[in-house]
Amino acid sequence: SQQGEEDPQALSIQEGENATMNCSYKTSINNLQWYRQNSGRGLVHLILIRSNEREKHSGRLRVTLDTSKKSSSLLITASRAADTASYFCATGSNSGYALNFGKGTSLLVTP
Amino acid sequence: DTAVSQTPKYLVTQMGNDKSIKCEQNLGHDTMYWYKQDSKKFLKIMFSYNNKELIINETVPNRFSPKSPDKAHLNLHINSLELGDSAVYFCASSDLAGVDDEQFFGPGTRLTVL
Image 1 (cartoon, rainbow over the protein chains, first blue to last red):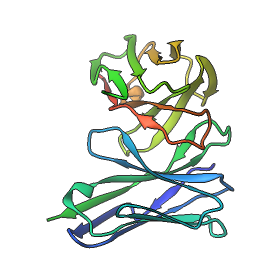
Image 2: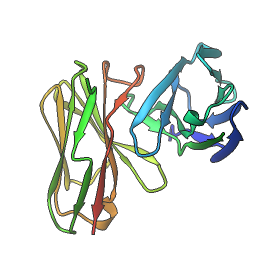
Image 3: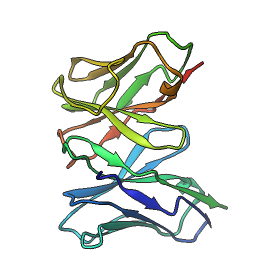
Image 4: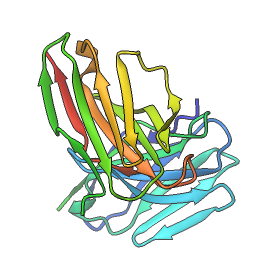
């Protein structure tokens, strides 16, 4: 299965600290995506990193991709209480037409 | 200016009933999806449609029947509901078919089967 696995399952930090979440996957990919899900809401796309990219930035987000280790990390710098959410990595399914999501990292940022 | 909308937001029903969930996107996307998220937040693809044509059916029981009357709509009908169908169902859309494009998700429909 292409399914990603996030680590840790849960993370609790204080506002202002950085949060790092990791994702591992099993087979080769064209790209890897990160999504955020606030409680009771749908998923929101954060960033897409292609297999030939090693690092990508978007605001306070930094994503790295290491295809040799089949892993990616999402770093949120200077976290805010509003960053409290679940974060999912996603890779392409075997069919190539849908995404396989990991089980997510639940991030809690306390003031 | 809702991008992907679903109705209803909550659905509580008895085992054995038949129910439908509706999804609409106003993004002009060609591809729409249904995902199921269980109580442990595990999100799994159920169906994918491209230009009203089914392109993925991920081993979903045939009690689930998606219908796409046009590119902007993908509805999900569920027959003979079972307890295990309780979950949150998300509709999503993307411009391109495939995994090289970001997906836009609806707010979800929480289905509870009693």
